[in-house]
Amino acid sequence: MRSSKDEPIRIHSEPIANPFRHEGFPMSDNQNFDHSVDLLIVGSGAGAMSAAIRAKDLGADVLLLEKTELYGGSSAMSGGSLWIPCNHLMAQDGIVDDTPEEAMEYLVNITEGLVPKNKLEVYVKNAKVMLEYLHDKARLNMFSMPGYVDYYPEVPGGKPGARACEPHRFDARLLGDDFGKLRGLALQELIVGRISMTATEAHDLLTGAPGYILLALKVGIRYFLDIVGRFKSKRDRSLTLGNALVGQLRLSLLDRNVPIWLECPFEEFILEDGKVVGAIANKQGKRIRIEGKKGVLLAAGGFESNDEMRKKYLPSPTQADWTCANPGNTGEVIEKGQALGAATGFMDGAWWGPVTVVPGEARARMLVVEKGLPGSMMVNSKGERFLNESAPYDDICKDSYNRNSDDAVTVPCWFVFHDPFRKKYPVGPFYPGMPISKALKQSGYIHESDTIEGLAEQIGVDPANLAKSVEKMNGYAKSGKDTEFARGDSAYDRYYGDSTVEPNPCIGPIDTAPYYAIEIYPGDLGTRGGLEVDADARVLKESGEVIEGLFAIGNCSAAVMGPTYPGAGGTIGPAMTFGFVVAEYLFKE
Ligand SMILES: Cc1cc2nc3c(=O)[nH]c(=O)nc-3n(C[C@H](O)[C@H](O)[C@H](O)COP(=O)(O)OP(=O)(O)OC[C@H]3O[C@@H](n4cnc5c(N)ncnc54)[C@H](O)[C@@H]3O)c2cc1C
Image (cartoon, rainbow, N blue to C red):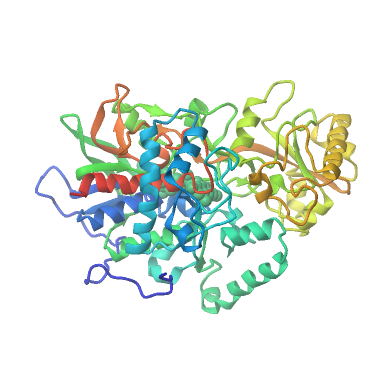
């Protein structure tokens, strides 16, 4: 297997041009255009890059447009996992227990008949091809995670691990100056806001797995041993998660001389006889006409950062500051597609997850791990539990919306925990045992009391109810069985449990003062609704007719996974796969 430390591969012998130092706009034969390429891609996330790499290798001239000053979008901020059934990396690890039939059975079951079967088939067939191609021919360097269960492992076709893959660490120095233009990871994915960890390391660190203190030391020492890097900046140059993924893909584009124009938002489509033939973009204040001879691919993310669109489409209440995702994803590209007559799908959905909004932080933080660890619970405005806190993060928010009522408010709800929990696990912005800053205490962000009743009064829930919920939880901690919500029953729940806690790694007593509570909202990793597409990612009208020349992938298309989240990597896996599919559709002979 190639390592990120290898010398860069140059597919072209000429030196790499700096794509950010673009001078002028070469005129195409068609004088109506300022610039002309075979495939014009709007957006610079992992899906866009996968499409660009494959298209370039098939001989196409490609250009990516990125609205913001940084490339990578939410893909760069993300965990970087890809959910790839039957991936070749399983076989390398000696885990080959997966078949396309099982993957299809699983997807058909969990998508509840809301996604055409042919789209799922295209995914199952091409996801592994895409992964292997980018491994062999480009710089992608991933491994499968044998223990990372599908999110519904008990559903027929579900697997106890290995479909989710994550990137190996990647040396940022290989990107040269381009490193500075790579959007950073979400704050919650960095130790003390700066030290990187892989998903596998994060799992062990956050769940307090045996050896986690030693691991924390190792990760910290590695960071400080990059002495040159420390003199340059705080940013860790050993990239992990979404930064490693997008870094590896960006290097693959540099190898191929594929440019990304930053701060160059798409504004409008250019049409010819009803066919999309290009787009108008804004380059340094100048509107320019760019031809996409074979097509325009929309890979511009969802509308999670657009308050108005959230209020129009998502369940209520909702707010843009409940998203953890890229601020540039504001949905105007979806709206422009709608204006062309494109149909949309799953606009009322997001890749949900319970979030905490920390004063002074730019993005919300999602409670992926801590929500299900022992010694904690979530309660509604009456002080009663209302769900299985260890369930997949997507389901927590669906339940929060479904169970929300005037009588028992679950949006927002409260995350309640006790002192040993605070000392052992990270919670939102708090590292294990580290003192809570005065500012956060004074802001009212966190509530603290020596008694459960005192805490109940502070957060405005019924003290007797909260005490009863705690008492029940303490009983479940002894028996190991949550008879109300089955917390810890699924293998998924236990993946994020504390393996040192018995009899149920997800349930512990809440019995040691001080007691704490923080408010939780139904946030997201991005929205999942967008332009309706067929199995080749061609954009469709309500009538089912194709809009010629227009393609959409990722979160600006209606999610291939429909209403569900199959496993870690269930959003970027499809974005990259269908990007690859578009390139093959357009350019493969
Ligand atoms: C903290 C976090 C962790 C996550 N972890 C995972 C994970 O491990 N696995 C997984 O599968 N998913 C994960 N997700 C979700 C995942 O990151 C997104 O669903 C996915 O990256 C969306 O890809 P995309 O290509 O649709 O959009 P993006 O990657 O966001 O790319 C879209 C790009 O288009 C740009 N853009 C927007 N409008 C315009 C315009 N008008 N003109 C030009 N450019 C424009 C945006 O600025 C952005 O850079 C995570 C998300 C977050 C926030």
